[in-house]
Image (cartoon, rainbow, N blue to C red; front, side, top):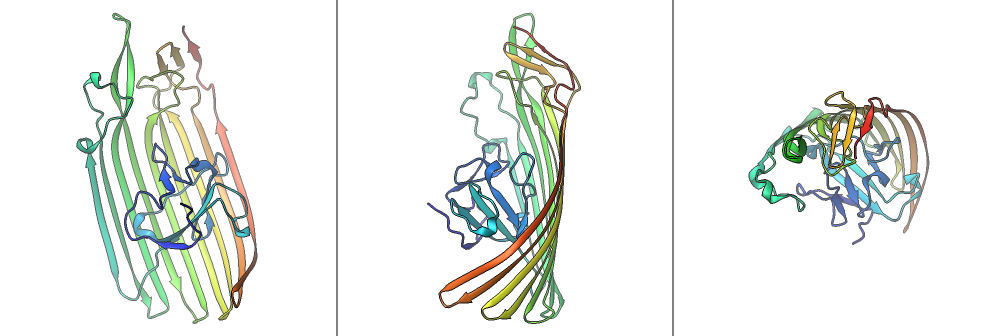
Length: 338
């Protein structure tokens, strides 16, 4: 199924945006067209939302704040600016003439959790898991028919676990167990819309996300120890503004500007050298610590002209990206044993 670049209205809390849009196994990225999330282009209200260092989308959007989304796979227009497996644009909600709000709560525990296909059922214990997800949104009117506001928050608390091993020197075996893998994710969005005249529409939106999680480092062996985990800290901020002017029923111009920041830091849970045994990765991965810093300035303008059955669009875009990738590999010593 090819998903056209038309705007689709979200009517349910679907885990996939369309049949060709799924999620990666670790649930981190949206994966359109069955391609890795690092080769896609994602925008929020037209503002670039991509990691220019390693690829993939950056900030998430609260489900309560999503009004519409657009998806284009394998076919692109000039406004995309570059090629990718797919392009996704998310349009956020705005306020209305009346005060309206919504809220939701989602809870899950290990009773509803399936075991991995490769899980050794002779191990006995099931991995612990629970998740609580809270969301709320509210919006309303500032000035009759002219200025509207909207805000949304979402918080996710997850207590998961990763399968780890420990050496039993006496029996020369690897004992298996579970180590905590918590996740705390807070994200929000605030938007204000103004219509000073019937022909003009102004919008400004601020979005932010704060995510902290612990998980397993990249393994060189079949299993890692509890110390072979890493803690990730991610901070996202974005500010976007736009001005749309209707010159006539057939001519529309849209001007937008945005600024966004991304801060990522990955640290070992225990500062130790990496110890690599034939059946176990112990200590701390040599791949951490590492971090990413990125700032993006974006300015774009597009004009649209409609003549009968034809639509002509012309415009330009300027971006300045300041990025830094700190890769402190071999920060700790690495030892291997055969």
